[in-house]
Length: 173
Image (cartoon, rainbow, N blue to C red; front, side, top):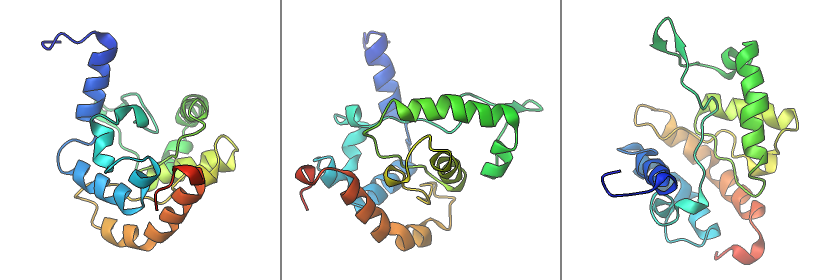
């Protein structure tokens, strides 16, 4: 607001500058570049998604509203925990599914186990499709000690999936 941004531009700036800020952003960019997403999007690096290429990305969450339990931030440790609660399952089926449906040409990159399992559930329910979902993609948190191994195990598969998803004429491989 101090820069004089109008509402739409202000929200774009907040989303672009706040998403995955800190140490997670370079890790996420490295993983996305590592599967060739930047080539498919015809940008130099996925780092541009947080700057001038922010119109090419949409950030969201499985549950895009704050959730508290006993006055504390609620963090589900499994998709079964989320999907086992009727209100969360309904929220996912009605809100997240509709949000993803509104972006039919978007590749879905669920970060981490819980998000991946929820997207796999939506794929199974035919609310989205597996060909555009990089299920199993690790969360970029530095606290995720399994990330390097998980990424190494899935990198070739995700690279192939990205190449197949995007039209051949947009690839620069």
